[in-house]
Structure formats: C-alpha cells, structure tokens
Figure (tube, rainbow, N blue to C red):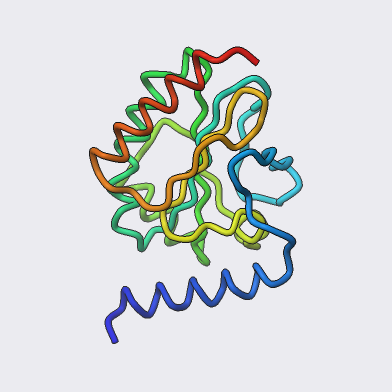
Length: 168
C-alpha cells in the first residue's frame, strides 16, 4: 500500500472518530461558529465580522493543497483591501509537518493548526483541501471539495467577487 493511501486512510479514520462526537457538518447556509472556541494553534485574525472569509482545511501531505496555496495567496493579496480574509486550517497531526510545508509554500494569509481536530469535527470536510466561503454576515455560502486547478480558481474569483459586492 502506498504512503499517500496510508495517510489518507489514517486521516479518514481520525475524522471518523471525531465526527462521531459531533452534531453535523457545516453546510451552505450555516453560520460560521466562533473560531476562538476551538483552541486553534496560531493567531486568528482580529475580527472576521463584516468580512468575506475563505476557511480552507488542508494538510501538508495533500498535493492539491500545495497547488491551491499560490492561488489563495494571490486572491488574498488582490482582495484583502475589499474585505477578504483567507484562513487556512491545517489538520496535520504534527506541527513540524505544517511548519515544513509553510517554509516551502510561504503565504500572506493566516494559517493555524487544528491540533485537537475540534473544528475539523464540526466542519466535516470530505476531502483535502476543502474550502468554505463565508459571506459578510458570517454564513457559509459556497463549499469546495478539493482543488481542481484553474476551474476552482475561476469559481473562487466569481464567488469572492459576488460576496464582496453584496452588502450585509
């Protein structure tokens, strides 16, 4: 069995264990929970109130995650002055794995680690990466399972621009 498959099965088992203890996944239309209650490692942005947020779940072993980081970094730089905040949540078991990934993929957006997998258990991402796009009122408006190159990038741009134009 190859290493990638072993890691994927291990993460799936980890998520399954955490998911069993939760109520439901975050879905389109749901409010974003208070992230400060999840004991995430790292500093959260000062305030997400009134912002358009991309909440991205990722892992260091995830190839599509590595492909998505430059795209999200460009989006953050392009739209941050209009109210976009990208928050990437690592599901890595070990901080050293996340840190090594970040050295090879530096970004301008906020990255934290869900060491206890509490937020992951609440969100129940189906795959890595999974991104939730949240409107200025704090509700999930779009969900992306996986990253599919330019097709996902185009969807991000359209959806982010739509959410930035909407008034709360």
